[in-house]
Amino acid sequence: MSTLPRLPSGAVVTVGTFDGVHLGHRAVIDLVVQRARETNRASVVVTFEPHPLAVLRPETAPGRLTLAGERTAALAETELDYLVVVRFDQKLARLDPEGFVRQVLRERCRLAELVVGHDHGFGRGRSGDLDTLRALGARFGFQVDGVDPVLDSAGQPISSSRIRGAVLEGRFDEAAGWLGRPYRVSGRVVRGEGRGRRLGVPTLNLAPPPGKLLPPDGVYAVRVEWGRGVALGMMNQGFRPTVGDGRRWLEAHLFEFDQDLYDREVRIEWVARLRDIQRFESLDVLKSQLMRDREAAMAVLAQPSRTFNDVSTS
Image (tube, rainbow, N blue to C red):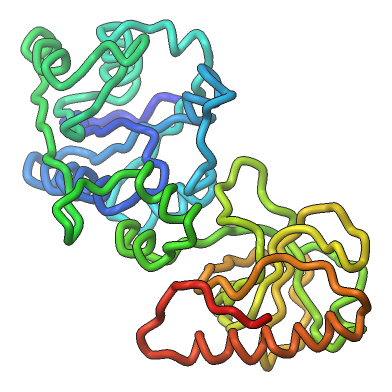
């Protein structure tokens, strides 16, 4: 991690994994920006890569709501001045709370004021908490502000773990409400084998990014964005058993669109699940099903208020 530029008045800092950059995270970031403006300081987010659990307990590390580039893009939409990404390794994990505050936050980030969520844990074994930080703040001369959780309409705290659960159950409306934006995946379009075009449903193809949390495999209605372009479509997520392809792909067919997006970066938003992955007895039967999928996807995408329950097209 490089040292920030010289900041004469210091910085208002927050620190965390920020997976999802959801509405709870945004409340913390908004206070960081507000306090920085009030005190003529820089606003700074400190985060980690890879995810700490991928280093400490890789067998239990969750799929990521936002991979590194997606998280950076989401944070770039805020009014923060600086993003500091710290490499998380065993050496960093061994730092106790005081060592982390001294070496990372004070020496490298010019800490003058710290803003954290109410349940923030840090340092070796997450042994530090808000009380620890306030004690260290009194000792080293920085202010500590705790932010209450942001609650959903049911009065429950918004969290990354709850959003992961919603994605895994296909509850994309809830996930989007808690994220403050649709749940989506970013990736670069690669060359396919042209099977979709021969069936009359040309597709853009992405390999699922390693570590990204995906909903269950199936066929989905989707929205796709690239640059300033946007299109509606349907996507096969998973294997292709009818043609004997055991590789996992994201294959999106865009409606009323026939341009080449090869090697372009795109974002795919899951809108609604249409059906499970199936093996069909012939390509003709598969093509007939794809036409039904198209009709079902277009009907869902045309709804002014989307519903996200499963829609059977079999």
